[in-house]
Length: 240
Image 1 (cartoon, rainbow, N blue to C red):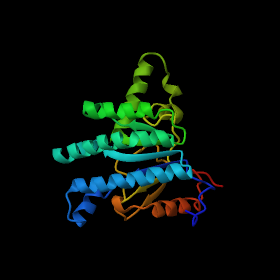
Image 2: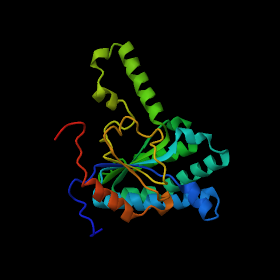
Image 3: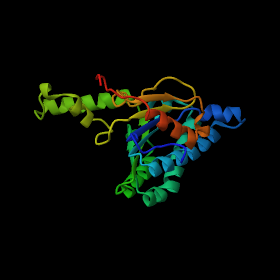
Image 4: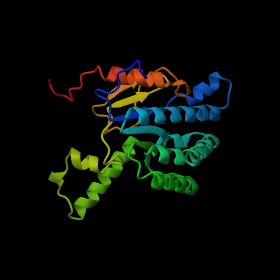
């Protein structure tokens, strides 16, 4: 890490679309689940690095709302991996002061998986080093629709007036309420789209697309992206 000067203009929030596990497995002549297992090891590396260098929030797109349409065996394998990760890593997250949060329609999760996730979030709630935000059963359009419905109910109940609805109110009703918007969004795997991920929150994020498949994504590549981010001039629609 000495090669990069990472302190000035350090991003507060990094969001990642972890793409390429299945293709990595195919390239190595393995079952798709082996790609997801290899990807889980990369998650460990990225979480440790981000906490070490001072990133406040790391959001990982772990399972999208569309992923429920994948073959049942693959979905079951992904859920097993999630449970295994939570059982294996919760203690380490507590030791490192990393707070775990989860966003998405968690009610769709198997009750055992959801309980494991909720328990891990409770056990790590006091963490101050970094927030690890897992997007599970998550879709950006779903999130916005849910927020709008909640606001509509508050208007109907007389708690709000329509002319008080603004971007701050909307933001406060999203799953990520209380977290800063991402400064950087990284997608691995060579695809150039955001795939229904944090549609509201990515309005002014710097976007990075890597050809590297997620299991091969390295700490050095993340540091290079952060270094590039520090060279960019962020105007947020203004003229500086």
